[in-house]
Structures are given as C-alpha cells and as structure tokens.
Amino acid sequence: MNINKYPQIRPGKKLFKRVYVAIMLWTVGKAIQVAAKVDKEVKEELARLPNNFTLRMMVAPEKAFPLFFYAKTLPAFVVDKGLLFYGIQMLLHKDKEGKIKYLGADPKGKKVDLNIVFKNIEAAWLVLSFQESTATAYMHDRFVVEGDLVHSLTFVRVLDIVEVFLLPKIIAKLAVKRYPKWSEMSPLRKFVKRVVIYIRAYTF
Amino acid sequence: MLLPGFYDFCCRVRIVSGQNALEKIPAMLKKMKAHTPLIVTDKGVVGAGLVDVVRAAVAGELKLSNVYDNVPVDSDYKIVDEAAKIYRQKNCDSIIAIGGGSVIDTAKGANIVASLGGDTLLDYEGFSAVKRKLNPLVVIPTTAGTGSEMTLVAVIADPDRKIKMLFVSYFVLPDLAVLDPRMTKTLPDFLTASTAMDAMTHACEAYYCLEKNPLSDSFALRAIRIVSENLLKVIKNPADMEGRLALANASTMAGASFSNSMVGLVHNLGHTIGAICHVPHGTAMSILLPYGLEYNMHRCGEVIGEILLPLAGSEVYAKTKKEERPGKVVEFIRKMNNYLHEATGGRHPRYLKEIVDKNGAQVVTESLLPAIAEATMQDGARMANPEEFLPPDAMLVLEHAWEGKPLDLGKVNKGGKKIKY
Ligand SMILES: [Fe+2]
Image (cartoon, protein in one colour):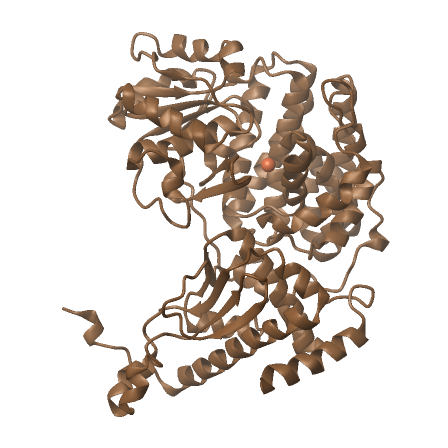
C-alpha cells in the first residue's frame, strides 16, 4: 500500500493556521533581512554565522503542503513551477560579503546549512502565535535543529531581538525569556526600528 | 509544578554498584556476547595502578591484554581514530573505558567508528549520523563527578578546525556502568572535592533549569543529598570506601538527571572558561554554582529553595522560612566550598582569581573576563537557563565570581515572570 496515495484532508481551521504561519515566516524572514541592515546588535549577532551560509526555518513535513492534494484543480503552472511542492518554509542566506538576504520559500537547488524544523503545524502555530516562548518551545521539543547547534543559538537570539522590535510589549513578553529593560534597549531605538523594519519589510 | 507540558526522559544504561562491582564485569560482558574488550584509558589511570585493579578483579575469567592508554586531557578525533584502529587490529568486540570524562568521551567516539566502520570519526559528524546499535561499551569511572557514563553525547575536539564536535545519539550511551569505590580511592582530595561539586552542579542545575521533569528531579534531589552527606566525610577520611561509593552513585544519578534535563549558566560559563583559560571543569563548577543559583533566584526561587531539604537536612529546612530558603541554599554551598578550601590546603579555589597553575601563576586574569562573557553566546547551555543570559549578564556574574563577592542581586536584569516549567 502506498500511503502517499491517501493524503490526509485537513479541516479549515488548519488551513487558517497554515496561512498564518506562512505569513509569519515570511514576515520574520523579511524582518531579519532588514534588521541585519539597520540594527547594530542584530548585525553583531549575525556576524557569528559563517559567510556563504543558508538557514531554513520550516514546518515538517517538507513535501506535503495540503494544497498539493488539490493541485489538480489548480492552474497547471502553479504545480509545474513547484510553487506548491514544498511545505511552509523560509530561507535566509548570508552571502560571501556577509550580507543577509531573505531567499523566499523555495529550497530547490540550495544547500541548507542550518535547518530548523517545527515538528508539525501545531508546533509552529504555538510558537509563531507567541503562546509559547522560543526557549519553552525548545524545551518542549517543538522543533528540531539539523546542523550546528551553535548557529541555532545565534538564530534564536536574533529571533528574540526581532520579536521585540516587531511586537507590542504585551505580546513580546510572552515570546522572549526576558523583555529588555530601558538600560538594555531604549524605547526610542525600539520604536524607530519597529517603524523602519515594518516599512522596509513590507515594501521591498 | 505538577507536570511539565511535555518532557522526554530516557536512561538505558545498566548500572552495577558495590564494593566488588568490578568482579561482575566478565559475566555481564558474556551476556552481551563480548569476549575481547579493548581497554581505553589514559596514562594517569595506568600509573595509578587502576587498570591493574580491574585486571586483578576479573582475573581467571577475562584477559585484559588489549590496552589503549594514549588518551590526553582534551581528547580529539585523531585519538579516537587511533583507538578504533587498534580495536580492529586486535579483533576486539567491545570497549571498557576506565577513566574520567575525556576517556569516556573518547571511548564513545571510538565505539562509533569501530562499530559502524570507516576510518575516521569525521564521517559521522553532523546530526543523527549514528543510527544503529553500537558494540558493547562498558564504562568504569575513576572520578565521581562527570556523569559521562549516563550521557548520550560524546564531545570530541577537532584541533585543525579548532572546534568541538558533538555526537548526540541514544546509541552513544554506554551499555554498562560499573561503580566501584576502589577506582576513586587514590584520587587526590582536591580532585575528589571538585569532581563531587561538578556532580552537585549537575543535580542543582537539572533541578531548576527549564527542562526539569519529575524523573530528572528525583535523581537530582537524591544526588544532592548524597553529595552533601558524604563529600566532607570522604575529604576528612579518604579511606572511607562507603562514602566513596556513595559519591560515585551520586555522580551517576546526577548524570542521569542532567542528561535528561539540561544544565544552565553555570555550565555555560564553565565550558567557556574551560575553553579559553583551561580551567578544570570541576573547579569552575564549584566556584560558579552559587552564582548560578543567585542569578536565577528571582525567576525560580521557590524551586531553588526546595534544594535546601536534601542539601541541609530536614531540620534546617523546617526552621528556615520559605522565602529565605533560596538564600540559605547559596550560603550552604559557599560554606561547603570554604570548608573544602581549608581541608585541601587551599587547593580547592573559591573564586576565579584564586585559580593558579602549576607554577603559581593566575589562570583567569581580570582582562580575560570580557572575552569570556562574549563567548558564552556560543554555548548550548544558555538555552535552558531560566533567566536570559547575555554577555553583559555574564560579565556581571564573572566580575563577582572573580572577586569572590556574593552576586549583587539588585544589579541583575529582571523583566520576566516566574518560570512555569
Ligand atoms: Fe559538569
């Protein structure tokens, strides 16, 4: 019996979570790309990663986006272009000069050095809707890290800073271990970076 | 805490413990269908006559003629490959590791190469490369502290790339750990002290760090009690074989605990100081443990306070008010360190600035502290620490630990709620 012939049909609620998680991954990817340019601390953190380095954050399984099941009903080019072939993910690349770039969601032909995999959509939902902090999620095995653990520490730290920039305090407090005090991050810096990151992430 | 939302606990090492535990090895090896073990050890262990002790204990039933004793203090993959090569040359079918942390890690690495084939450990680098059962591995610890016999990780250095490689897999776990007090009898007092404090640190950190769970808790609490009741006794009377066996048990239990829970900033700083200044692991642990407790107190004081019961006994625990218990725990550990410092003639340092090398030169100079603080970001133990631990935080802890002052709790960055495990 080929289990793949019997795809699971997931109800609409899951679809909402998938769309949400996909948007969040896109936002986080873009935000990190911008933050790496405009924020000194993020820049310094990312300097710890080697150059020519690709990082991927994804939801397992890699090749089972449920729309794949509906692919027959979609225009042919969507399937041909591989747009639906891969699961929800985002790729970040640090190039030879050390510049950070968001690479989108298509891993085809890219060598992934660090792979951060949420075990399932529920796990990704818990973390990306900030019901569980990154650290708690790590403790609860919500995601696995494939690659050098040291690099994943850098990524988690960057994620924490970017979350503080993007989210209002009341939500960010749930996402990070310790919300930075004034002495650690001034409200002015937070506010300016928040505006800059949102504008640049959503415009280009 | 009732139960954490999720936890994961696995401990599949068979343990034999007793005054004559070594004598059981031949029968147990036979059960694992192994007949020609390779001894992996270091020159110090051989010099102390410990391999001969094992040999005498198994005489008549098992011949221990294949010995690899080249393991240095900081083992690397070349040593592992060499050991695996000898394993094959001598047609061995199992490994008996006799030694401390470095020897045990080397033996774990050699077992990977010897069991899975290939010439070098580098072939098995990366995630989940070890996917099947390895050949039998027996561990006889000669220090009571590292707990490596219970951990599923082998840490092996690559000197060319200047990195530490981690090989993490349940298959890396040894099959059998043999705890026999004859193996730690000759350990100098200051090493007995620092290794036991390493075990104490494993148990304490496992108890208050983020991955704590009911199973790791029970191992941790018992280990704390055993170390607290026996360490000073053994230092006073090195021939106390019951006390030594107890410490060996505590070390193994603490190992099982932290292997399934996690360790936090004490190990984060300890690993980093070890890498930069070559401070022995146990020494760094005993110095930093009080600071780890203090630093995290505002996030999980209640849990830290619970440590007082196994540490100081029921009478002290009952007499101490609930809110004073965490502080009392720290005070008790500091007192232990002070006692050990005196009992070993000053060879058990209490502060970072007290650590000296063979020639009496200071090992951790004040100018190195910023570099250490910065490097703590590269160690995995920072994840499980209850409070966020960034370089400025590390600097705060390091300055106090260097000087030997209690941590100024007012200076600790706060901003998070009480931890819910
Ligand atoms: Fe340790």
